[in-house]
Length: 437
Image (cartoon, rainbow, N blue to C red):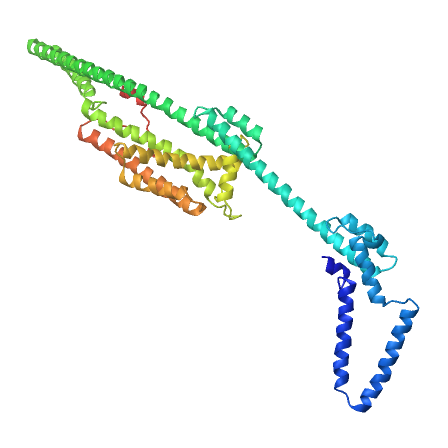
């Protein structure tokens, strides 16, 4: 940097060496001149030497040499110079103020060098501060992870949020909420598993109650038929004993009435036998599940269907939109779109439950299972139209499976001479489930 500030020569000695080198070059050129040129050059050279001797006699100095000497003294501090610290922009600026009086060019060079040095020093301080900040964030992140690990898997959402607030970050808050939701889901799963066992015992008790009720109804029917047979026998005996037309007519009218009553009582029974009724109950449960699934699919399909006028749907899927909607729901800041996203997730969860139930051995219609798997695959992506089409195919498969169960129920009842169950035109059951118990 010193040579850049001082100019072409860094010292008076180097300047003088360059001057001597120039004289030697001119002497070499003189040796190559003709006599006339040499004579002319000799006159010029003599005048130049005379001028130099005269200048030296009167104490005059080469201006360039004098400028370089003064710059060297200012830089090194020799001969009473100020001395310049090339590592200190302020020292360079103070020297520039002094140099401005006798060497503006040197002063300008000092100012430019001081500004460049100050800029470089500022950049180095900025980089050091950035590195320190980054390291501090890394240390805080490690402390946060250690604190979360110390809470263990049973940590509550409040505890996780408190840690996230302490170590400060919206990302940590979302992560804490997600971790809390996972723990909450596990507790819910255990509760549901216990409730499932209770429900199984309750269902077994209800089936036993049905069996006893059906046995009592069979016994009641048997007694009713025996009573009707006894009534017929007595009427026939009365007819045989009747001696007059009036008595016979009266007996006949009574007999006809009895026959009508018996015919009325011989309507098709309302219930199947116990073994077939168990199958009917399974069909009815499948219909109820289908109704619930169909109801849960209506809203997601509607939310993903583009409006005929605007050509846009309420819910649009994508990496950013999905994360944003999930975050609003987790933070209890739900909107119409985020609630629509939650309804879509619920529909996909229904498909997942069907798949899991089938894997555990529960029989599932093949087409329903296939479309459920397709919906799970589509729901994991970000294409709104692909997901909507998967929902529609899944809905159609569920509706078809429901209709097949209705046909099985009515066909079974017809083959057994039992009165129809009584479904409405839309496939809704009109007979309460309680009448089967």
